[in-house]
Image 1: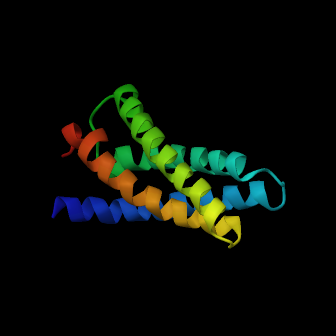
Image 2: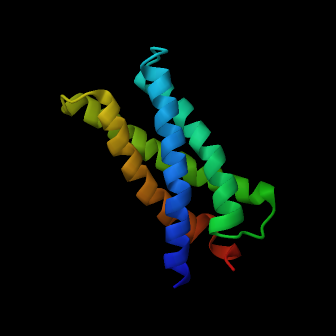
Length: 128
């Protein structure tokens, strides 16, 4: 039951992160004209900060120090981010749709693997 509650909370946080990330990526790509990669990095950094604070405090209720939580969270983020970036680059090479839609596909992939890794690695020892 606790995992279901966490997944629901993670989903709520994730919706906020997704909106923040997608809007930042769109602004960077469309009005500002930055590349896919620069836009993607900027969007994910904005979502990452929001995600860490809300998931640490609300979703997983971690009692670990901010520093140790941040290190694990950062490691998980890096692994998941690189996996989604590889998927994005693959999709951009092989699909003929607007690259912004490939960003959204990569975001869904990222969200799933990030929850699993945060649940079972980042905050595992500190769940209440």
